[in-house]
Length: 110
Length: 120
Image 1: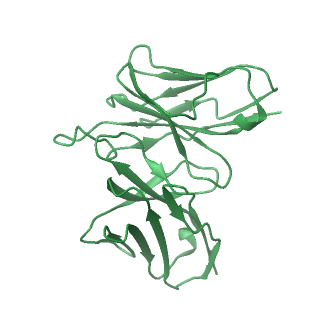
Image 2: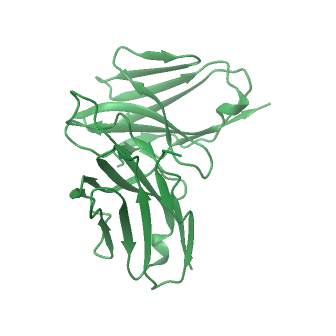
């Protein structure tokens, strides 16, 4: 079993719709949580950090549920430019590496 | 461009050949990481350096792989006797821990554009 699990999709969503992704992690010692975005054949880029209290950045909202060990990302009013792969990432205290999920592929349809 | 630079961008090699990739981190970043990403998967950690010291290596880093960062600046990743299973995107990242957060450095992580290796 992978440490970080995501539904690989693809999610094909009409422009303007709301879409949500979930991610589960197996290591209860996981310390920090992030969503990264990766465009086709490009490097991953940090989209947002995820906090227990939840956080919002424009149309994007991230939530962390430590008890159930899952992380979510909500995208409202989706744009064509949101088409990408969204990677769930966890780290552990005192450990430098990022542990990535397989990514969820999102395509916004005009 | 003050980002993380990787060279070459693409490399095609025959099975059994050796290849070497280079990564130039952001100049003030003292931590440097190598990841490998295969098609349909997320990046997987290979190794990381703090300055010139290699502090962690993944089990993925077989004895055919070696990474160096001799002067704590640029890094090289060498793959000896390449195999078709080595075909992947090799990503380099660098970071500088924020004051008060020296125990982890996920903040400030910046990835390079990667080197895409194809072994034929």
